[in-house]
Length: 252
Image (cartoon, rainbow, N blue to C red):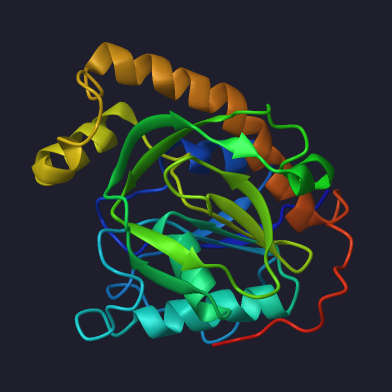
C-alpha cells in the first residue's frame, strides 16, 4: 500500500496532533502539518489523499481576528465536495459544518468539558469508520460552542445528552467529531489552567493526572484503530460509505 499523504491543519498552537499523529503514521500515513498563519496553506488539495483539521480556541467564524479561517473552511468544503477523506476534530468539525451549510453557535447548555461517553446512532453501525467502535465510546470534551444545525445532507453518527451533534458524516467520507481524540494529559491540563471558568464546569478531579492517564489509555484503545481505518480509507484500502440519495452537498 502506497503511503497516503494527509494534510493536517492545526489552527491553534495549544492543540497539537499528539498521539493521533503517531497512530496515523504507524498505520502508514505521511503527514504534512500546517499551522496558520505562520505556515502557508495550500491553494489546492491535489497530491493529498486525506485532510484533517484539529481544534482551537477561536470561534469557527472569527474571521476578523483570524482571517485565514476562511481558507481553512474552503479547504474543508473542497474535501467534502470532492470525496476526499476528511476529518474535523472539535473546532475542525465546527468549521466543516459551517463550510457546508450548517450552523455553529454558543452552546445553549454551557461548556462540555472533561471525559464523557457518547452514544452511537443507528447509521454508525454501517459506517466504515464508526461501525467497529463500541456502543458508547470514550471521548474528551473541551468546547463552549456547539453545532446547532447540521448541514442538510449530514448523517448523524453519535450524540451526547448535552449536545446531540457529536459526530456526523457528509457524503461518503467527510467526518466531523465534536470532541477530542488527540489529546495528552499535559495538553488537557494546560487547557484547564488557561480556561479556569470552563474547567470549573467539569466533574471534581477531572484533571487529576492519574484520572487523565487512565482516560487517555481508554481513548487510545478506542481511537487508535479508528485512526488506522481513516488511513485505510485515504489509501483506498477501505471502501467509503455508500452514497446517500440526498442530492448534492450544500456549500456555504
